[in-house]
Length: 122
Image (cartoon, rainbow, N blue to C red; front, top):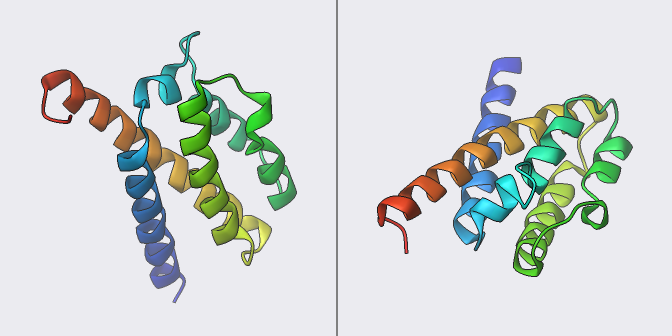
C-alpha cells in the first residue's frame, strides 16, 4: 500500500512541476537569477534542510528572494498551488512531496531552457 501512495505522490509532483514549468516565462531567471543561483535553486537547497511543514511555508515565502517581476508572479501562482496541495499532508509527506516537486521542476525548467536555446520552444 505504501508503494502505491509513493507512486501517486511522485505522479502528482511531476504533474504540478511540469504544468508550472510550461507556464513560467523566464526559466533562466528562475533557475540562475543574476548571481548564478536563482529562486528555484535557492528554495530547493533550503528545502533539503526542512523538518516541518511550517518550515516549508517559511522557505516558500518569495519576499526573501530576488527575481524579475514576471518570475515572481509565475512563482507565486506555482507556490500557492503547492501550498494548497501540502496543506492536508502530514509533515513527512509534505516534505517528501515538496522536494519531489522541486526536483522535477528543476528538470522541467532546464529542459525548457535547452529547448528554447535550440529554437524548439518559442
